[in-house]
Image (cartoon, rainbow over all chains, first blue to last red; front, side, top):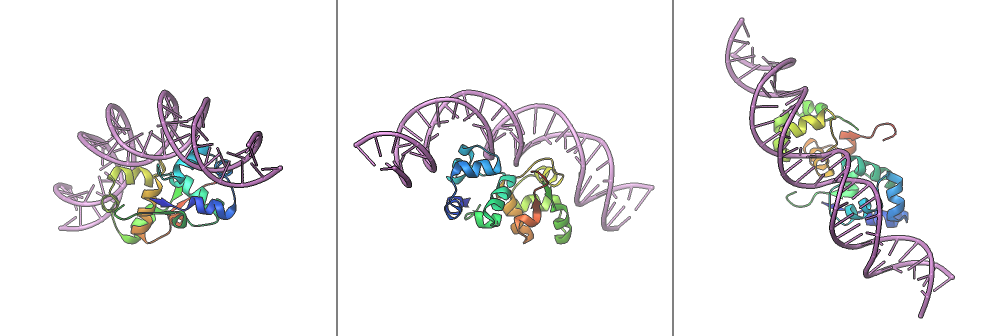
Length: 66
Length: 66
DNA sequence: ATTAAATGTAAACTTTATTTTACATTTTAT
DNA sequence: ATAAAATGTAAAATAAAGTTTACATTTAAT
């Protein structure tokens, strides 16, 4: 699954640590999600979407055959 | 987190087993998600949204303080 | 060039999602 | 009323998410 979190963070100009605090997870959780190492829960996806004022689909996209 | 999966299934008139097969999980996974026992991954949420032709936000909603 | 802030990474650990199997209960069709 | 299909539930197991601590590397500011 692809994600555009790094881009959205750049748009809002916030750090991984700030995003982590905003949604109540550790900074490493943001880092590993952002770098595609694992897939977040739907709760985290919804929280991120809220922070960035975007839809979940704008933040996360399924890849071919996924 | 609340979800409207049962309703969407009714709209599309498909069973838990059919939904499970459509997105490649076990029927019990659908059942437990539907009854709110746990939160699915974002991949599953996106797949369900695709099946139901709805946004993730229309299927899953954060609750107060979540 | 140095320092501070931000990011990347990794290992060990805890928690939660998901599977499998199996059976009980409810709903739907005949 | 009976049978079949659908749903609820539960326990044990495995996979994956998320935390914590700690340190290395990169980027930004002075």
